[in-house]
Length: 66
Image (cartoon, rainbow, N blue to C red):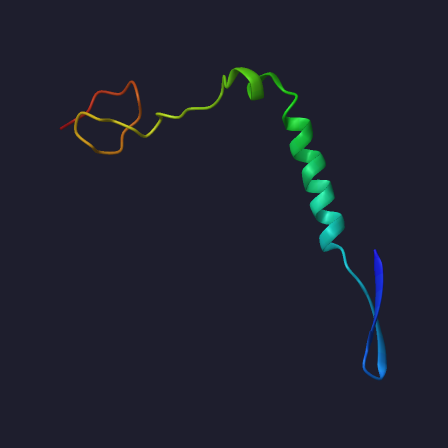
C-alpha cells in the first residue's frame, strides 16, 4: 500500500507492507481455526514435558532413568 505524508518542506512517499502482511497472517490463522484440531485439541500436548514425580523434563510415557 502506498502512503504519502507531508514532512515540513518535503513530501515523503513510500511503500508500507507491514499492514498488508498482518492481514495475510490473520487470514492464515483463521483457516487454522476451522481444522478439527482447533476444536478437539487432538494434536496439542500440554503435558509433554511435565513430570511431577521428579520435577525433571521428560517425555510422558517414558520411564525415568533416575
